[in-house]
Image (cartoon, rainbow, N blue to C red; front, side):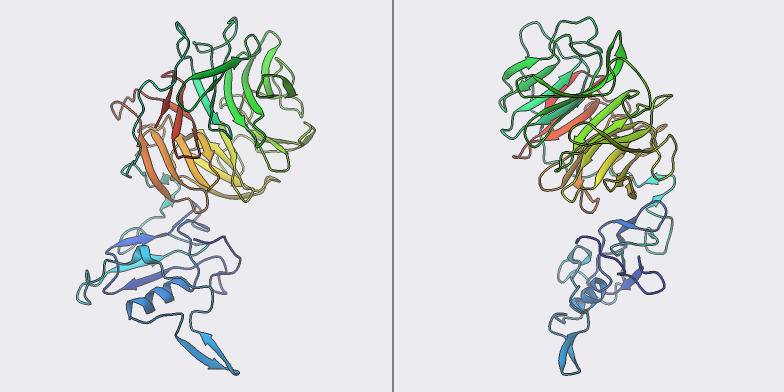
Length: 436
């Protein structure tokens, strides 16, 4: 609801509280607010300690902003100035009576527990995972055969997609196959919003196209995720015309030093130009985030393989929100981890599924692809694209994968959205680029 502020709970636990409410006018049997899996910080629908009091007064027919008392010659509100009615917990007017007791719990800007249902239960982010979000509405429709490839060319594995300031769509695909090694096809493609191919370049430069990202100046950053014969294992920055501007990593060399990567997956830049690389694709590869200056000088790295805070298993995507927080799609751990730009762990979210790709738009809307969830890897979650808020972690929409739930025919890994709200999904194993 608002940006987090410290010490908004009670004095014995300044980071959180729980309030139960019962009475007419409240929605029946709901839980409002969810915590991280440690049951310590609220990550969804965070509210101030004054908000449930303001809501209770509303139910009594009292305007909390006008209920004041005199103290030392001044008028003070009972709910202070940090107060809002949480309208999403209220039933429709006239829909409740005092004979139908209903309970609702509020969670603050940071919380210590989440109780499911009316009389208690487990954390909404229990250590076995978050509650699956599969039944949300989808206002999107798929545009059939949107992207127009040259005659005779077919899609290869397509892990990522990005959009420039003009609304053109850029893709880094694997040369009509699952690798570009030995191919003379250009893997970097630019499409107009209509789907018309505008240009392509990069033939012979890459081994295993994985990530693509366009910065604020429309420079193109691509991630070559594997190495072979002196190529790959690099991050390459190019101009929109295809001129190489910067490279990170040592060509064809795998490692965990300041100038090497081992199967990097994704890249993003901060407003000041600092570069963040998600390095590692599971197994015996790396499991870290590497930070560079805008000129490519190594600054720091954080993370190791594991399941704890700040540890990774296949950091498969990385994005930055409007306040500078770094979001990492920790895919094999079924979570998004959030850090400051120095690598300090802030929190984790599991409600977006098993993240393969992420995108945050100018309004802090968060788009997350889930291309792997099933009853073995992430029970309860369906594959598809979940869309919500990077501010509070709420999930609003879900675009389900095409085909049978147990065996989808669209395996969407990369995601981006344009200024008009169109969503683009890049598919690796199912080799496609779709527009919604």
